[in-house]
Image (cartoon, rainbow, N blue to C red; front, top):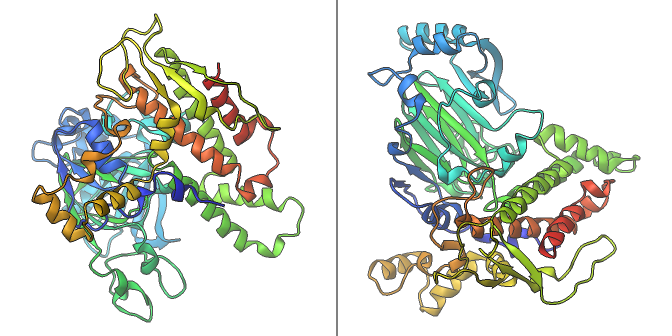
Length: 513
């Protein structure tokens, strides 16, 4: 079976990973972030100006830049919060318990007064679902760059926790080496304090496993220098990237970048995990790999009745998601995007009839659909998808969008520089710097880089977002097409309403409504 990462936006594994410095961004458009960092899966850090108006930056911090224990006690003192002991390892993480916030602050105050003694527990308040606990408090506003958040958009419809967190702890608290859940992106804003981030690009983690196949727990440990314990660690020597994050700055951590974080000062941060059209293929690939691991663990039970379903149960318990929930997420996001497009007057029509197979999927609808944009009388403004020409309406073949979105940017990059008779990263950089050729970012397909001020999401959808809404739907359709070809999916006993085929059918019905 062709892997989705091979046919769609495969830029996520090889672009930009040789860069060993982080760009610090101040004023940047969403489009620029989208094409230079989000699609290439390249990390960056935003300047403190992005958070300077946040309530948390003012109320949670004293005048000298330290956490305001007094304010925290008064407002959140009775909250029950999760606390990890950084001195105790537990299944590649830290042992956790729960405390009242006032009790944790008493500990922190005493720990700091005693100059952070090494023999005392090093407690880190982490993974606190603050937004769930205080939905009306308004501690921060999600930056526009991260608002296209399928994960929390979907999780908010479920009776479970979200992926929005507050972290706070004294100097010396830390998070073990890991990549983020579901191969999601993450962003982390320092409300106060200073963090040290240690990154390795995607793929390096395979060399950072010990002789038994276990990922290194502490990337700073001396054991990495021992080839008997970590036989392949030397292969990624020189790939390590270290970044210091200061007060107010926001770190963008792309999908699959393993990292370890150490608080160099008393620190408070706000963090979200999120995914969207840019990394949904990596999420699906990770889910497939996680299922394969489960199947290997219980391979001796393969002949048992309901084995495939039992694998999904274990997958959900171990990974926090299974195929059924993943499909439900795609269903939710596709429905939301279709409603947003309908509200913006995007009318669709077909140039020929189409046939559905036995499961109700239209096989050729993406090649025959035309968009009429901005002609609905309820739509106050026009949107121009592939052209800057101002007109009341325009027709755009969805096949053009589909092919553009499926085109591998890594292929674009390679082919472009080959045409320029340039090979090798050093030669490319030199030629771009000398002005001999344009950089690949300057010649990306226009569908990906037309100027816009806002992004797709569940709130404040504007007609300028149409290309991003369409991009979401195209990527959902691509992913669903790979799901229905997956052998493990075919073994699942699902009602039609829960199936990937049903979601594909909803998309096709919209295209031909």
